[in-house]
Image (cartoon, rainbow, N blue to C red; front, side, top):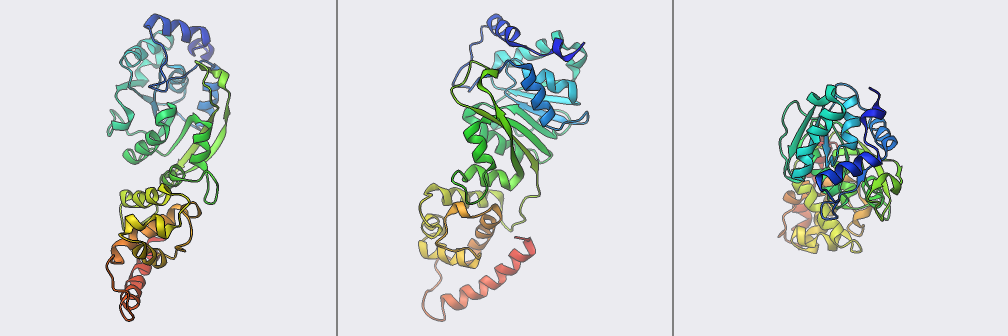
Length: 316
């Protein structure tokens, strides 16, 4: 059976939705893909092979799921909607019975999933609900270190933020946090007409490949706290923006200078390695250090040397 007989088209999607009494909701960010060429393109761009175990978030009626099953060893589909989660295995058995044993459906909120059945996942491929796209990607990359790569379809504006580089206008929290986990690139636009219902925003594909996390002497959560603080007030200098995080503007300046970062810079100028350096210097530069001569200079200087050695060892 060719994939044209397996994949869902506009008529099949609408018929299946009508039979189930499913009406796409904005609450769950549901826009179903109805174009077979688009799902073929997604699978092709994802660079998958027969050994991959794919996590798909929000499979909906199964348009992308059916295309993925043709290519990979296994698909673990995470679906929050109970009706859609219950129907998906039946759809696969009816349209591609020889592939049915490759599918596992997990009825759950992807933001709460911390373990999955079967072999560890190797790739994330999904048409992500617009309202949770960024947190879902970041959560799954953190929860499943075996995810080596991925391709997600998101709102075009979100795509730009995810792949932005330091210095750009849209560079921000999503850009830096994704860079902690992976190298990301924009993999092309997606037209509105491939969805039902047709969204009022443009979409795009984002591809990413797992990278080694910056080696730091602090946790990811501590680094992410610095990132959140730095971008909470984008127009402020880092000295001012990190004042609450460090304990005071003066303490923030000491930490920044020890980390080799200009206190007058803003968050959008820093890459993820710089944020990691800042985070790891905080416990080394005491908030209440004295400021008089032979106080701050002597103490901060000594600690800066120690910390600088740590940063060098960390490759940051």
